[in-house]
Length: 262
Image 1 (tube, rainbow, N blue to C red):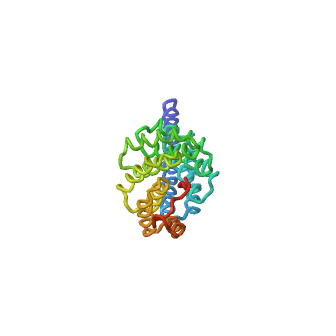
Image 2: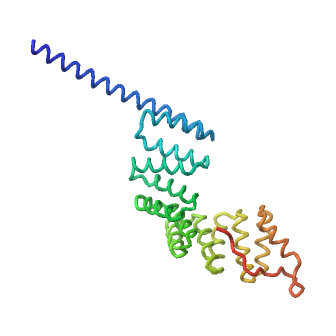
Image 3: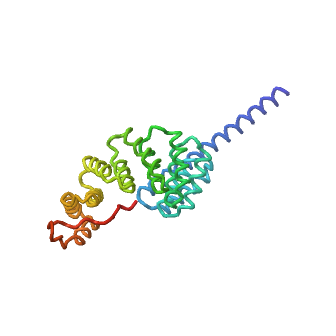
């Protein structure tokens, strides 16, 4: 009788464990199905539908960090930055070793013009992922907007050293040199960026400004014309402003002081 009772107890326990395991597998499957639907909605640009699917995902799997991160991205793309911050924060709590979660939250801080918080998040991300040149380039931009040109240059230098073909790092470093009135160095970096990608009207315009500020008007005019042809409204405006040519040289008059915006 005792053996029968023990056997029955074992069977009941086994069935209970089997039922719990089956239920857990069912919850995971439900969550994965909703998560796939959310990914499809994201690809279609239907962010409200994606958020609804991710809400269902998290109902079945409340500790799925990737779902919080994806929902944060959907909120960010809808311009709901505060809600994005909350979801990225939850993703970080669940996966504190994921550099991408810090990068995602840092970018939202940047959009909110909270540059110090953006720098802090990217610094944490870089400590977890130190071999990503894009991260140094992005943090350098945050430093630049925060007014720390020295730190910005250090990050842009690091990004370029790690990836000599990272065009935006040359552009950002050139913009930093423009802010420091180092126009020759800015021209060098704009030129390198144009070697990597010649069809950049904004870069042509900015290099044209640097030539203008150095009173190298032939080169300035050449860049402004090229930028205008590629569709730069700013270059076209510069050309119109300089249309009355100086009687002495027959060339456009140099600007007094114009620098590209950040």
